[in-house]
Length: 223
Image (cartoon, rainbow, N blue to C red):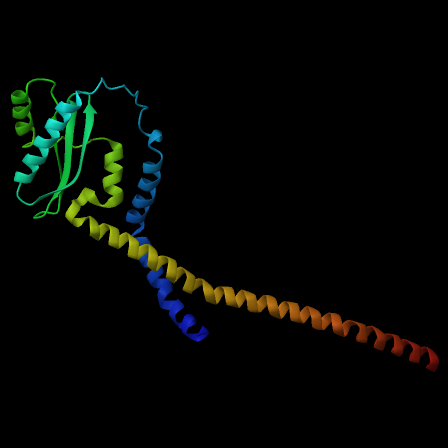
């Protein structure tokens, strides 16, 4: 087994070096963006949270939710994943419908404003709102997230980025371990030999001292 690992460590050393150099920028981008996503306060100004106004009556919200569900069911191939009520400074209170189109496998979300007016006006605004998507969130955090996940190249190609980074990290970790094992064993063998040599010298030392004493005593007697 040791011989196999030593044989593999030589070509793996070259592969480890060249793959690390070739993928240095992608791996660094994933590492740096991951750190920046954890610490958004480093690059984003602190937002002052404003309390939303009191929500519309529950009856109005229930009517808009029913309208949103009815309109979503009319969309061909649209599968609802989540529906909730939110507040936005420019839109006010609205019902957010999030789902996935089966044909494109892309996530979509539609907004239905909740207006405290008549049901006819509210129905018209809901029907108009379902045809438009909310504007994408812009900012550094969105950019870092897309770069970290690979969605900056398109959601349909994000898996290539994730697989490339994941397999590369796994290969570099395993090849680094295989490359290090022969070095570790060589160092351990050297240290073992040094300990044995020291023990042999320490065991031979008393015999040499007794032999030298006997030689000195013999020389004195002869003299």
